Image 1: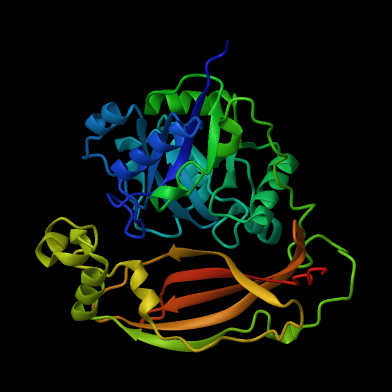
Image 2 (image 1 turned 135 degrees about the vertical axis):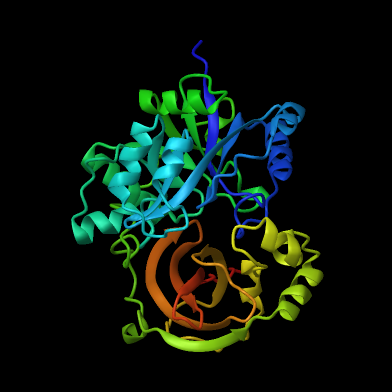
Length: 398
């Protein structure tokens, strides 16, 4: 019987990503719990944002929980984010990792030349994924061999775009959770047709090409694997084509219209209050001396979640006339730059898109809103996206 390994190739932790809430030990405990429920996860790769944390030893944790913990990095390029595995001094010496617009072709080539390998992260997402850059700018994929097509933080449509891109250009595909919190780890995995126990073996396995993206549900013994998503089945704006019934009434002029909805003054006091309320103890946010001496930013910064304390006005309303029930379908946070004491953050909201799809309960309308947060220097520090679902609830007979 051929040996297999299941790895989450995209994980962020409090040890290196300031927008993460999951600790490495917390992830290990989650893997332990998932295994007890019948799922198969052998390990995960820490891919911290713009920072390679090489001076922390996870050997004891790995042995305690029987989990393989590997290291990579997520860098930002001019065509979106890129995961790099097999990091060494040669690769690190070539780039300023704080740069959020590294030349993508050089990143992919340098990874290969230095003995590692690069993968296009969450390829189907707007702006930070490869798909739009290929489609709208004609970006070449000559140096790209693998993309992350199954991403736990992306929608089915975004993942579908990734798989379609891979099929069109002959790219290999992997899966990763993009976990920032413990319960997200393992949602999407990569199944290798070999045993992987080290960073070197991971690179060898990725170069060998014998792997595939899977959902965690697929790892249970006897599981029937579901079809992977395709954007051809879930168009971006109309959901799934003609779903039947009347056309949805809405004010289309509200879509894409960005308006200012509020501000947030960030001070040492407000950061301290926020951390105290959440019992946050990360010294990056709470210890000025440590943050100045050891932190990557030279001073205390604010936890990205502090943006949730801003009192924002409602954004544009597309006036959708459909359904009698609504609920949140999910949200995600992207961080671009640290939020510092003294910053004045301005928030701008837009309705990014409105689309339809069908579920077990019937026809549904999704409203995706995006809020962009900009500091006093005009620099975007973060953005949030949230999806609201509208649906009709049929009256019960009786």
